[in-house]
Length: 436
Ligand SMILES: O=C(O)Cc1cc(O)ccc1O
Ligand SMILES: [Fe+2]
Image (tube, rainbow, N blue to C red):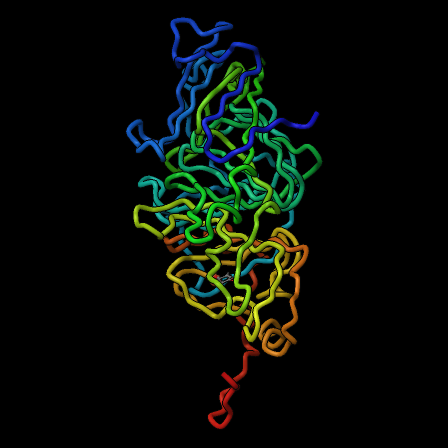
């Protein structure tokens, strides 16, 4: 049966699996219908301004206190949290990794999550981490929750099904989902092994960017964001609930499924989005716009216009600009750019950047098109060209990103990456002037 979702970004949703399970006109009646417990989950402080305030009311078989009590600390595997004090063994420079294959070992969402970079400080709710995720086994009586940040999951290969307290979300390559901080879930693989990129946002939640003069439409449209309808498990089997909290991994035994929410209402809930629904806006006469024009979601910091993390994509689009060097320009950026390629070809690196691969262009490190892309873009006939079948993305943060020991030691790290610019020759000729 296809999964059911409700459309809209940050709406006040309501959904119930049994008729009348949601109290009417109040949150906390003396007795909730069907013998359910009422519980509030606050994603922002109680006192957050109305426009930013996020909370949901969950009507569940048992309250959270019956699922989570004393935790014990367990091995975090390859998950790291900022500030990551493990030695950075890498010399400063532009970095790129070839795709890391999905290992053969049995890996669940918990054991298959591997941190690549960390930035900021999770304890102060600043910054982010970029992870790779490999899943070869579904979680059964195992559940996960992240108190350190929200998780933006970018499917790259294979599908992932998230059974959450709020309902079930499935994503395939080209789609993303966001699991808010504190939400309990488990991950299944409906059709074999899966690989994904994950951005863990330690700061305030992702929201839609302002459109300014673009107006009321295009870019990511709110109606294309989908939140699951309620779904619950009434399962009295023991298992483990893992919680990432304070940069450590904790575990407690559960005697029943904590995914026992029969009905809920509110605006703090997981959601998914198909990146192909994004309507890109760009230069239609000349020049190359800043990539912020392709922001799907932004997690602001306290400084206006300075994101804690922006999630930016490079989707299919027409390139039409006249007398323009069409790929990204060479640049240095105060923000740090982590990129991945979901499918297709990325125009700045047509040969070297492979689907499933990743690159890191850290704060103020110069980067831009490789030699091949420069030569082509400087000499091609500037007809309208469609960049087809491509989807790259960037996690762009105001904080420098530190590479983890795991990522620094990966054999896929390309030692000679910077050679992709080695062929950029000196063309300077004081006697020659291009027409303006
Ligand atoms: O560096 C990159 O490849 C990402 C990027 C793309 C673009 O079109 C403009 C700026 C930018 O950082
Ligand atoms: Fe860049």
